[in-house]
Amino acid sequence: MAYYTLPFLFINLGGEMMYILDQRLRAQNIAVEKAKKVINDIVRIMYNPRFMEELFKPQEIYNKAALKSLFHDLAHASIMKLNATSMDKLYDLMTMVFKWQVFSASHPREMILITLNHMDSTRAMVSDQTVHKQLDSAYFMFIKVPNLNRKKRDWDITI
Image (cartoon, rainbow, N blue to C red; front, side, top):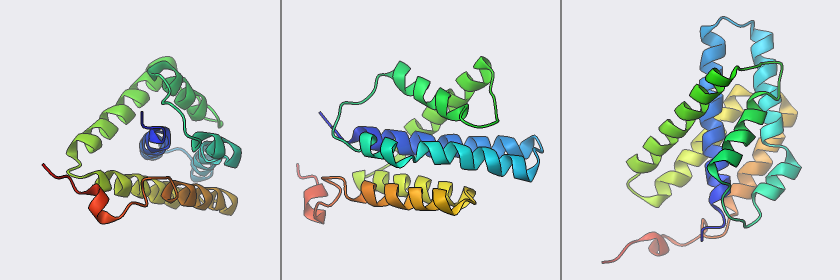
């Protein structure tokens, strides 16, 4: 069992959620300050240091309902509220795009780069320096995950 799958899944789905929410806030002409508050609030909770410590402990992956509930709670962690239909669409879009990225990756190393890209993009959306520090901490936790630090030859597949 892959006990470090949960951080991959959470960071990537969370990154997709932030892309979608940012795009929707812009498309609906939400005031810049309100949009910043929504983004900062969600990312602050998403990358909470205590939550990250729990997330990075070796564990089995959450079931689909628990993962969806987690992202539902995150999406409602700010002044923004989504109705059930909008939340379902958001979650479906997040999972669809991440599945596409997984199937498009030609090598496991690409998944690491996709995850780091999600973290970098999320960081670019955030204006609060405290949240930047939380993201930096999560970034270093991610790159220290066992098996990510393997030598190149360990990733090569031989047949």
